[in-house]
Image 1 (spheres, rainbow, N blue to C red):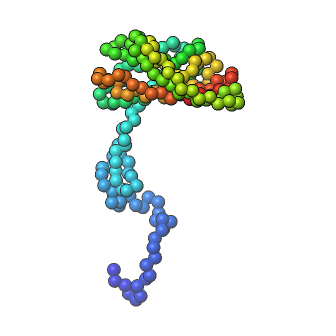
Image 2 (cartoon, rainbow, N blue to C red):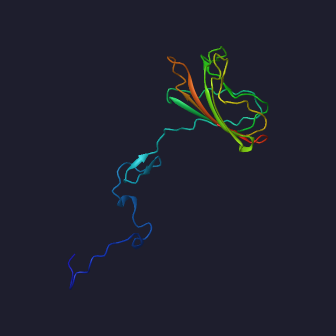
Image 3 (cartoon, rainbow, N blue to C red):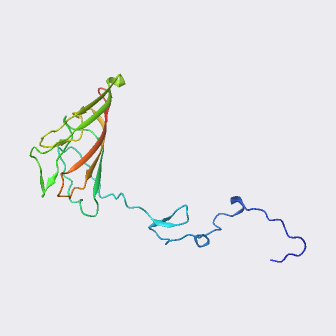
Length: 189
């Protein structure tokens, strides 16, 4: 643009110089498709939200001795995670797991496993750490290391089941848990 007289000195703009809402999406050099399933990344690229984790369902359970989780497994997903939160047992016992094969819960002595326990006991006065060969040739697999009692408060577990539809290998899973016993003041993981 031609100037009459002296050319003004260029002054850099700052964010405060630009009124909010002035620059629209069309003014950006963004690539990709803007729609309800994408977000704008910091490098000006529209990208679909990752579907690595998909919530398949929620179950609220009260006062039962067992539950069956079926109908969620498909070839769409390979691994599954279950979150068991804020439970308080109605009777003492280990939390245990059985898998279905051809629609039937396997109760034969085929379960094998091990666990590692670390925790504070007696109000934090002592620390315990134990490796254990739980459930060798058992009729079910424990996924809590210790006997749970009715004084458990806010018990929480995460259970990962690996490739449950695979028929070439043994079923595999891993669990992590945290419990607090309000009567004795111990925590275990």
